[in-house]
Every structure is written in C-alpha cells, then in structure tokens.
Image (cartoon, rainbow, N blue to C red; front, side, top):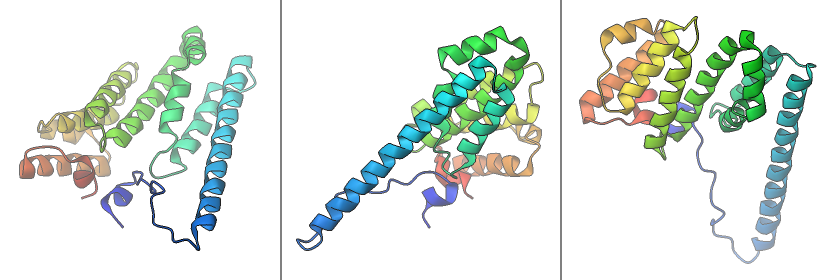
Length: 208
C-alpha cells in the first residue's frame, strides 16, 4: 500500500498506456470501452441524484437536514472523498444559496457543512495543487468562523492545517484546542514534518 492509499486519497488508476500485445488488444479496448461507459453511467446517476436533492429541497419535500445527511453519505462513501467536489458545487449552486438566505435558521448548519466540504476539497488538492489547496483551507476556516456556535475544536484543526500548508509552525495552544486526539496528533505530526524538512508534505506528514 502506497502513501496515497494510506492517507485515504485518490491514486491515479492508469492512463490506458499499459502495453497490450496483438492477442489482447481487442479485449483491452473492449474492457476500456466498458469501463468508460460504466463511468459515464455512474456520472449520469450522480447528476440525477443531485438534481433530485435540489428539487426536493426547493419544493419542500426534503429538509436541509435530509439533504445534508445524503451529501455526507456520498462524501463518506470513499476514503478519498470523491464526492467532495460535486458536493461543493451543489452547496454553492445559486439556487441553494438563495434558499439558505431565505431560511436564516438553516444558515448555521449550512456553513458548518460548507466548511467541512471545502476542507475535503482542499485535502484532495494538496498533492497536485497546494496553492489552490491553501485557498480552500482558507474558505473552510472562514465558513467555520461564520457560525454563531463556532466549533473551536474544528476551527483550530482547520487553522492549524492552514498554518502548516503555509510552512508555519502550529502553536501548541492551538493544537490543544483541537480536542479530538486524532486531529491534535495530526497537527503535531505536521509540526514534526516542518521541523524535519523545512517545508510541508501533506500526505507524508498526515499519515504518520
């Protein structure tokens, strides 16, 4: 198992360039065609589900809590949080944002889940685009702080992760606020990694 798999992030499954001899080429092309078709169908199914969630929320047949619970299920379906990008797109849909603005009682839960989703998008970007990842960590922190009942533990974890990605040491008092032992351990691992090499390497330090 490699570092990406251990950390629970996506590993590129291959670019189709694997060598095929003349006897297996047709089979390989057929398998690739089936896989492409299956992926297209899955994407279409996901698109339909997001559409149903949206229409259900807007017509009142689904509560925001029910929609959130389903988005969490989609997010947690894979350790690589494959649905995070689509979930964020859903949450930032202008009609969804308008719905939240018209229902002030929904703002608190919306911002909490928005922060959670932005954080997972940021995690997925740390390997290939750390600069963009930092921008999403910043969004996650801003939305975490936008709630009246701001979870100090969650905000501390997000803030600590952001400091690490910016190459800055995480203060121990901030780590202490990340009440969940696992999150505090991760932040301390980030500090050890920075001290060791002088720059962040998210996957390497996250899994220690």
